[in-house]
Image (tube, one colour):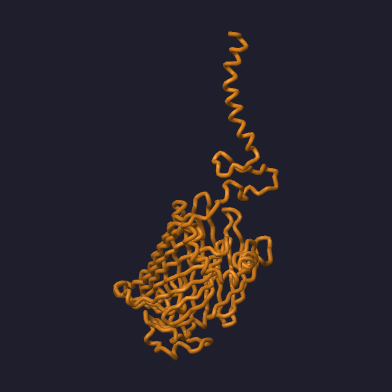
Length: 449
């Protein structure tokens, strides 16, 4: 065999195979290889003006919607059709205005070297329009505390003031601080005590509350946190001078435990939370659990001692896709007096307010030693990426003891509305809810469920 031919025989076959393998690549070199796990979107270099976090063409858009997905979406597309015309500009308005009004990225106000002074505004039907101010000193290092001071005065003479100091260590995963608050409200609503109060019995009294607390928290894991808390507080109730009718007109003051008196107490306890959510703070899958227990003991001779505890469980389940979420929530709070203790003052009893609100009824309409609420919501995205519609059903009840909590006595709420979730974790909900006493229409702004 000729040496040259022999050398060609050893090299020619691999070279031919390489050319054959490269031919299809050359033919399709300009075609995007979407969906190919070996293809990686170009990453901008350090001096590039591109945004490294911007989504790239890593996968191709689906060619069509699955039949099952179409079946699930159709009823809600029909329901949402008239709302698209009514709220055509809602997404634009929410995207432009709401992030700056409800959760601004930068505080609006006077920026001083060490703090920012900002105006605040609040409004509720109970207190009216309430202008105020906030002074915030942000923490830039672990050895600099975060401090916030707030004060406000409403047109119905409500006065509020608060002070918060927080320090912490990111490396040691702990934080602690002080929190003090004072609130003077001459238009506090009262409907009675028990599970069978009615909205027509609304009356008013003056509530004055002050407290100072210290806390320390430790992040055990990225999912779990525990806190120790302790402090002193004072509650007082008196005749209202700015609400009609006053409490004395509808109720006999002698039948309302603690009315007209002060109750000063020391409190200490602990709480903890555990969360396994796919994302926060607006998850579509996962579980959240919270619990707290506190011990109260009177300081001014009223001889009241009791233990208060509360717990909460939330669950989020996607229904076929991330745009549809089944959200469930159950909360329970109890105040159990010690044997031989005098009754707990009425203004310290658990009530249907804030996280425990019965949605089709007035806030604080129900109060007793036990309160429980169960709620389910079905949410679906109608204006991507932040506006949802939702339908809800809720049950709630108060009772003097756990054994007297009965399904026959629950208060039901049904309804729905629109939910906008802002970029910094705040939400705005506009909803219409119906219960045994009629419809309740309102707008809520805050964070939470």
